Image 1 (tube, rainbow, N blue to C red):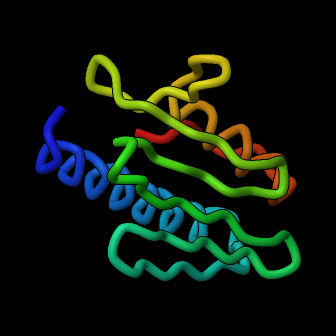
Image 2: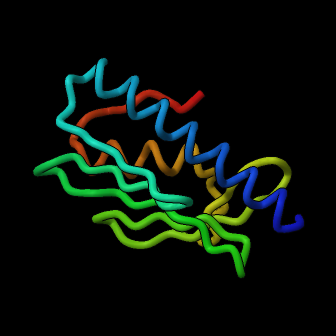
Length: 109
């Protein structure tokens, strides 16, 4: 993957997460706010804490910081995968978000 492709994939996943959080905010009446500055997306859930997604261009990775820890994702076969256990970002993000906000969240589409 070249740098342009990497930045396009980062932009796509961050926009997907933004739309997902907007839908969840309406569905669950969540106390949430999000802010995107370049390739950093900060999701603030008030008392439940923050999740921060950001790109690491030099390594071509997507990083997630959460209460459960820090996670690194690599892009393979058209998807982002957790480097520790090879779970897709979409599945892993929903698990982490559900644990952090205390609600069972639906899959990301």
